[in-house]
Length: 150
Image (cartoon, rainbow, N blue to C red; front, side, top):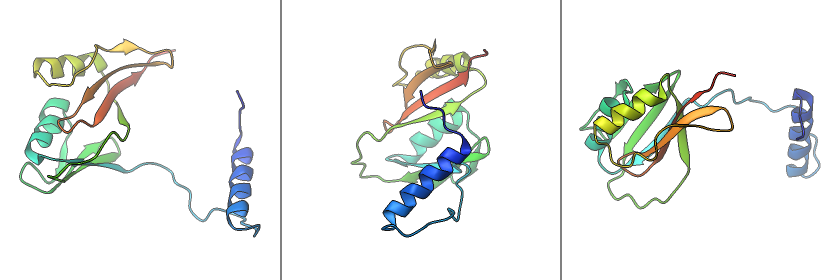
């Protein structure tokens, strides 16, 4: 496996930018992305999705609600946003991975709430996480995980 330090990343970025700019020199990237603040998911039924994320998953509601076209939940320092798109029509796009304090307790809570789409029980992965997957009411793939102690 190749291990890159910060200077290697900087040089690779500058090389890439110079290539993309047709050989012109590009000294520094003007902005550094530091984190993801929010992920926005399209949903077909806002009330059903709010019940899932608020009541079953346990995310605190920050804005909007069951009757709104846009809703936002607090997730640590970031947000999960929902936007009402009644027509749907999207296909598989990826997965959101949420870190939680207790994977097994959340899995049990979702089972007790009879949430459809809960996959196999939590398991310890070779990459150092305990996790399980579930689909939200609109089919978005979610993973709930926590780091395993070394």
